[in-house]
Length: 471
Ligand code: NDP
Image: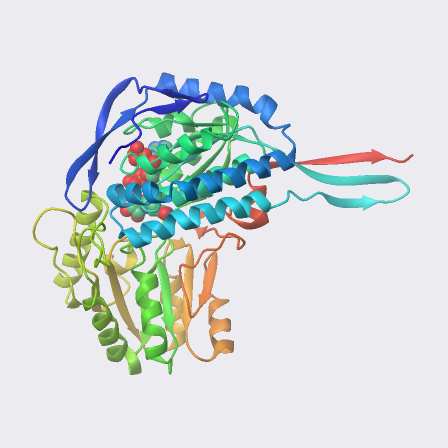
């Protein structure tokens, strides 16, 4: 497959001035292409181009920016096959899931195109007219991870452009190609310098975080990196949206209809091989239904076909990278050593590629690393409880607070439990569902700020109060 071999600065395809680096296909463990690598000087050039473009782009009529985003969405659709292939090659997910990612990328772009930036009339009296407007910030730095590379880039870039900012994008060096292709497409629509991209292994993200001419960083990735970005952003008081790690709990209430909820639990725990920040990562089940839930989940897990995402019958792809694969194996072995029961999976698949089958782990509790830490992989620990109050305490007993869920037939009871979860989102009879119109963000160490909806759009703006005196 042909991959984009340049970065983009000021609307131009530019050679990276460092030696290119290999990008691994997680299904083979082998490099499939070389990615261009930028220098810190090229980061400066990209920021300078974005800064120059901002001077005029911020004044582009609203209707023009809406039309631009619609044209970008059409280009994503027109290049959907290539984008989906790239996502599967670099990320590993089954092609059908990559196609969904591309479809969602186009859908999110159209949703942002149609969003309006509100003007709030705060006072309209004989004395004054006070209106709250929202102005773009300037250059936005977008730093993205490797789990949903195309979709998360779209989540960052589209609201930024929609509101009149300009962007420098830095994708994960493990999954750079779908974002490089996206930026190539966006450049066919927007004026030069509005979107720029710099790729490189290590150092590029830091150069952006410390850059005085970047006004905001939107970051999705690990909590330690988010903390580093926050520290380094202090110098010029960058605005931040930080979407960080999660270790989401799900609580199955006593008397739940197991057949009705088991597929939903499985799918939302193992979405993208569990490599989703808001996947269900710990499941608390009442003792009366514990064995039944465990065996049902193990049965569904055993039906998965594990293999390369490019093979048509495969439903379950590899873990994205060696480090993540090692972490998952390590945490399962640690749980096993502490007496956990591995109901299915629990052993890496022999051969090349980072294949780890869906794994259900029973007889674990809080205090075991697999439960306490974000394992970000294809494993679900199932924890027994005897009192719903205890389940709530255990669910909240974590530094993370991205999402949480409650599963059961009594919606009023589920609602009262959901209200007590210390999370940015609480789902009932679902998990991990994100929607373009529903604000999404973390609490506690999972970050701050929201993405999506009007609230997410406004994170790319600076409020300005207009006060017109009427004497
Ligand atoms: P990181 O947070 O290390 O990397 C995410 C992005 O940040 C990459 O583009 C990376 O660039 C960049 N980056 C790394 N260090 C810095 C820095 N100091 N300043 C600015 N940018 C930086 O995540 P990993 O990919 O290493 O994954 C590690 C863990 O993060 C996972 O195990 C998982 O727990 C969590 N994670 C959470 C995600 C989420 O959606 N919330 C997504 C992915 C991971 P480069 O690749 O070039 O190093």
